[in-house]
Amino acid sequence: MRILFLVQGEGRGHLTQAISLGQILRGAGHKVVGAMVGTSPGRNIPSFFHEQIFAPVHHFAAPNIIYKAHGGGMNVGRTIAKHLAHLPKYLKSLHRIHETVRQINPDLIVSFYDTYGGLYNTIYRSGIPMICIAHQYLLLHPKFVFPENSRLNRFLINLNSKSTSWLSAKRLALSFREIPSAPELKISVLPPLLRKEVTRLTPQNGAFILVYMTHHSLSKQVINWHLKHQEVELHCFWDNPDASEEFTFDSTLTFHQINSEKYLRMLATCRALVTTAGFESVCEAMYLGKPVMMVPVPNHFEQECNAIDGVISGAGVMSRSFDLSVIFDYLPKHIDQSAKFRAWYNCGQEMFVKEIGEFEKSIDMRRKMQSEI
Image 1 (tube, one colour):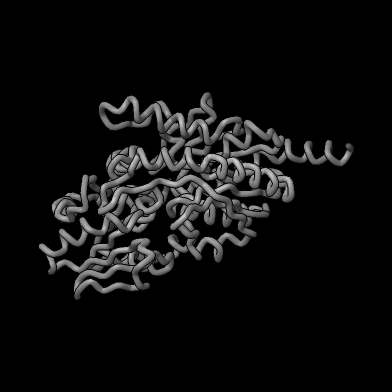
Image 2 (image 1 turned 90 degrees about the vertical axis):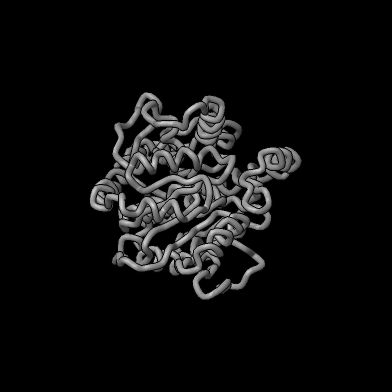
């Protein structure tokens, strides 16, 4: 099959999932014919994606989250206002996606939680089947455990997940652990998608703590803790456009620009990971047997859900701030889940090939009908 990816470009997780699935699909004889990726001001698509997707990359303007200064979390008001102000631009992006699909004419579209996925299906009705993949679709599952007193937030995030997958053929929900699928909701629960580079690493127990943050404004919290605990070696990855490739704050605190290869190498050799509660980063740490302290970005309900689910799955501990004392208190209690996690992950390749391969017969029929017209 000729498969076209539609990828949400915000954060690292959806991009790395697309790379991983591309590796699996090519190994099964399919062809990834392109990747359409949403971009926004101040957030460039990391170079590793262009290098490792092995397909033409098409960019389009997409909505993004706006954060408050100094680690204050998501600014809901400004985010909504900006999206409304840029609505004409986003409608042009939707048309650009349609034109790209028409030019490439794929057999299947795989959307990685892209904002435009459901709108594209609803407005343009291309007739090309779409599969939607994300951890967020697990939140639609009746067995998912939510934070207490979160009915409104639960409704809103699930409304968004439904909107990204309107008229899709199937939702593939990525999970830290095995959970029965919910076919009545078009939900198939599958293992995480990790790049092969992660599985080739050999974990070692180092002395330093690795920190990964989705926005450089959160670095202030790390620095405040560090100034009181300068004996602890910290290496932090951030997206600060004004910083050098490697910024040495002092002898025990170093900031690194996001670099996939470097980050994974340090993840394999760190003592523990402290990160905003992105699904992909926690999965990589679990595979390598690294304890995780998950810090949901303030006002970011999805990350709060990820953190709770990660704790239930044995990944580590949740914290409301980058107070690294929390991870040091937790470390003696941690039970390594890497063997269990790897067993679940190793089921993934066969499961993904099967889920996507189910469309081949209908696609062959569509090709035949097109050739007869």
